[in-house]
Image 1: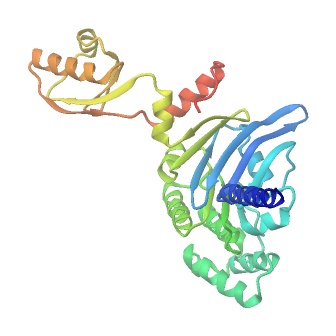
Image 2: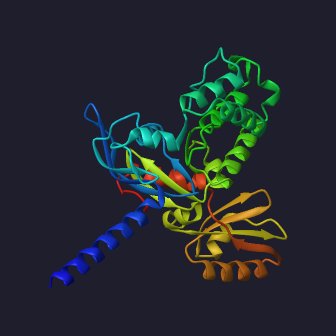
Length: 339
């Protein structure tokens, strides 16, 4: 009996260790996170995981709780309740260890205006305890990576906004963190600078760094990230890929149709009961339909009747911006989120 108990205890310990290892595979784990500010609920039971090597978009309107989440995860703000881990380390129990494994890029730069680009990187490296030789080589490596080698000896304050954002991200990478928090990295940048910065973010992620990205640029989120989480008033309203979220939100399907001639949209809708909405986008008709197969059959029949050829017909997803607006409207109407 004693031997049986011993074996059972060993098995239980192994199972517990296995579950812990499975849990620790997530780079970021957030379970039932709550935070109140003077009676206002900033975060209300937020739960999500970010897997190692993932690039997750963390979206929401102003005041949704995105920056609050990042501040709590990076140890800058205490939580009221909930379980948090970064790379398997509890944020509250060992904040120093967490800070050694993360990089944070705030919306407004936290670098020193009077220091040169190289000087800022060397100073950050010193704060993280890097040996001088390592600091110098890492600074030069990052200046090259972010296209700032020719600005190495220029004061930070003299840089353009796009260059400042690049150096701010470079500074967050000095100690080679496993996880990078990016808060609105392209806000206020011109098109070319924003595009270059997105390329840098892709490269950082391809190199193995887990990235949590907040942005108001919805096309940027759907372009960069394989998974998206939408936060509204401190609650998770939707999560998944852009297409998965759109499929859950949209009650109607959508077709894109090109015909060989012009069509009266009212006549089209009257002749095709499965079409509930029609609009012209360039030379393409965008049709909202209740059932795809019925709509296709009705469009084919209609086009034959008015002697037009169908040049192209295909399924069309709504833009992510349209989906995002629908989720906000649904939340405002009190119908809850789309999980």
